[in-house]
Image 1 (tube, rainbow, N blue to C red):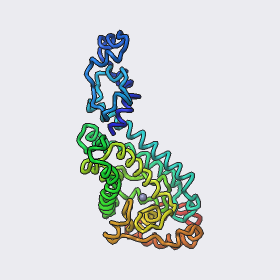
Image 2 (tube, helix red, strand yellow):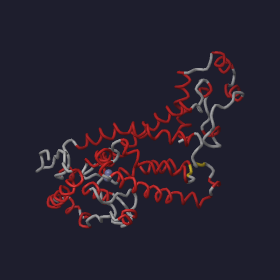
Image 3 (cartoon, rainbow, N blue to C red):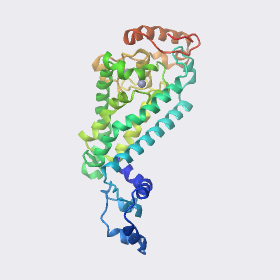
Image 4 (cartoon, rainbow, N blue to C red):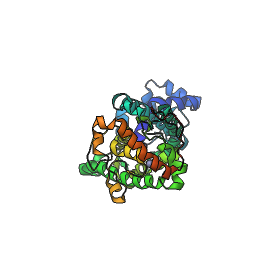
Length: 347
Ligand SMILES: [Zn+2]
Ligand SMILES: [Zn+2]
């Protein structure tokens, strides 16, 4: 995150903080009086630790970086800036990728499924957009610790070599897959399910907009393994940014209802659709490994890879019948309001 923070500081925040908290007039006058401000700036101590050794050549700090009393290293400035950056990027990532997925991938015929809810998409969006600001709030301390140098994020590839540079990707997926399985399964314990995880299971037939539609504490708890990783294993700063974008896109992909792969090792959309329909199976995020070990794996019905069978009324009826049985065990009373052709009633 220090890379992102540095770029945002240079282009946005330095200007805002220097306008809100300017240095005393005398310093400003000296800087402005200098024929070449960069010469004058060299004589002033650097108010931050650069994210990379190339900071001065790639994104040199402008005069505004030195014209505020709130230096870039100020912990409150970092907290505020990280919150703003993460909230904006979080919302944009969700809206842009979920919309793209909805327009180009999601099969709108599944909105005719008898277990599709009334006003489901707007409810998914409201749930996600009200949860994201809180999830970001809980997440900022992790980013702050990383920016202040407590994690194991690194820049110089030579530090751990090219073999580790490649290895960190499967290591990240393996580590977080195990952690999310344990946390997600824990969230299905009746005590936690009712209080935290139930809002994400409102969606029996999810759309891509359900991807981030959680209770904020639920969403945060399931993201914990991602934040733990760079404190346990070295992670390159660019890989970190790539992986954090990837996990958000993956979360959207497993909610798009498009069955891409029958690969028995991958917990894709087919497996996660089973989780939303039948609750007690496929808690994994990336692979089916921990569900197989934990005895919760349920293979998606092979016939559902055929579009005709998948979008068939008889299939939906049969799915609804089984779902109704399980929802009674898990939630006792089903409080959802469905919008399917023969389910326009509160159940
Ligand atoms: Zn769940
Ligand atoms: Zn889900």
